[in-house]
Image (cartoon, rainbow over all chains, first blue to last red):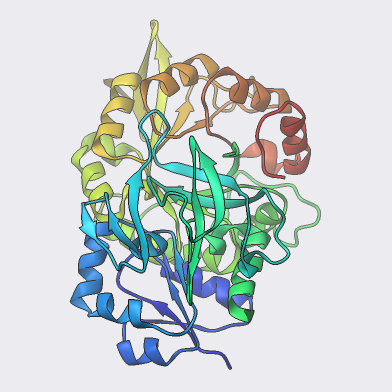
Length: 194
Length: 251
């Protein structure tokens, strides 16, 4: 059976990710153990919360060194995706530097945080197999990753931003597939099977 | 484009849904997990669960329930009712809740909002405000609308935003239960006052009321209980109607 590690560093709603995997008949192991993470087939890097304090937690467990070196498929969700970038304006913190980008705060003329179901478009990854253009996914965030060379899906909230990014074995999604209904489950399933 | 959200609200007492529900196709309509699954499969964008007993002993049961809900549904949900400490919030978020809703306790201890926002982020802090229209002004009420305060609604809304609340759930005590429509004027003013999402609550009786609230102000979500529980308004029918009126809706 496939081993999926869910990185547990005290940030946010890991239980929901575990249950989402269970609904897909997969077992996710919540762990901060480096050997367990390295030895798993796939890694999910979730996160809800604040960037600089999340980076501190990762550092305290040595995970800031481990994560960028992982060779298996890694899926960062929400804050997990943002932390894979160079730097975040949230608490002005250096991040894991997998993606060459800064994470920026949404402009104040919009309601911040963005909360709710937004459409995703310009889908360019097998992560979105069987997902139509302009499908709705659930997001909740105040910071965003701009559109990059590595963007594989966009959303719009005042501006177009990266709602998914992909580079080598690393994929990040800004939305919560574990909370995005049946379509979100398809995205998780694609990550597991591809 | 960001969609407007439709949120059924479930009142929970002793691990059962109260206010009654009326779905012929549910085996046990009082079972919140089953009802939550029904709503999530039929187009709800989010769910709110309010613990209306909220004694210390029941709180543990409620956390267990949040866990079961998280295990069974794949849309976000908020839990609220009687939250008084970081520990209360911690256990609910760890049980799988996406957001917590706080009300009376925040009015008595406003710094609690700062504390929560700092520890868990604004995105999971929903500030529930119950208010009544008194002599051309709106005042905040506590404990399910039973205690009047001298706090003005719009001042309080601004303050909770500044303290880090991520969303406001506004219930007009004047409209709640009347089925005569939402408090559109107050909601419109509220949406001009703060720059965080607003959930409208209280007064939904028919589909037109939802159209009206989304057309009148910059409102992000509408919450209702009995009209959904008694199937007076079907979620799918509601959402199709809203979409036909060019309101951005997830179908």
